[in-house]
Length: 152
Image 1 (cartoon, rainbow, N blue to C red):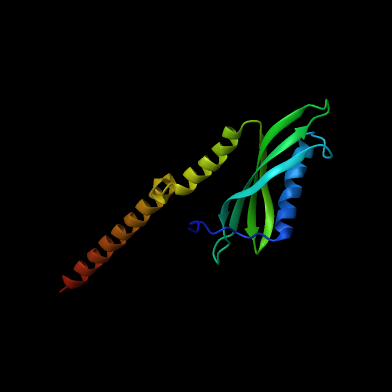
Image 2 (spheres, rainbow, N blue to C red):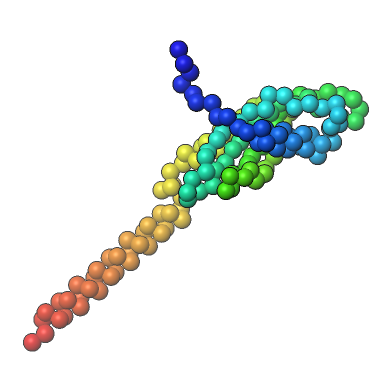
């Protein structure tokens, strides 16, 4: 029986760029680049680029980081990318010591993208202003029409 998912095949250059970015995250957090290693690098959210919108990718990874005092740390990282004209543009990066914190990023992003547009106060404001504009224009037009028709 075949799985229901369609795995995405990323080019070698994408894997290399994401891997380099993950390694750079460890270096920025002062972990030894020679002794630290990236494990289980995977894309957890993929939105392809469309005619009207850029795409996005969210990558998770686990790492074993070795600090200056030679202590090993299990780390959980997240890398966000924007896909613009077929090119990856690095976005935000984060490293956590707890997998649950990292999962919170994915859950919050899903909640933000799932919230309907009508919940935003600015959307309600502009819809109300448009309705008010249509009503005022219709009243003015009816008033002018009545005054024109009642003229002797």
